[in-house]
Image (cartoon, rainbow, N blue to C red):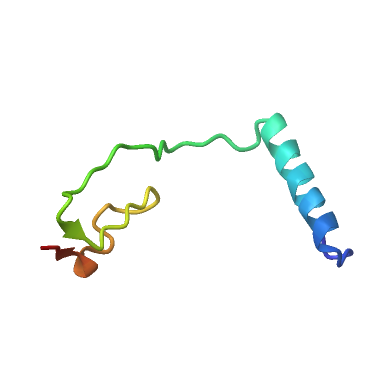
Length: 65
């Protein structure tokens, strides 16, 4: 990727490298990040994030009227 400046060509290279890794089973996910979450309809500022704790932005939550 360091030898090409074209954005489209870089995207093709990145996809090809990803396909090589996935087809050879070089990367096997060890953590299942899928989950079901819910929040009250009167709770505002809640942004669910599957990569972090569900309380990551609790300081920004507020109660709507």
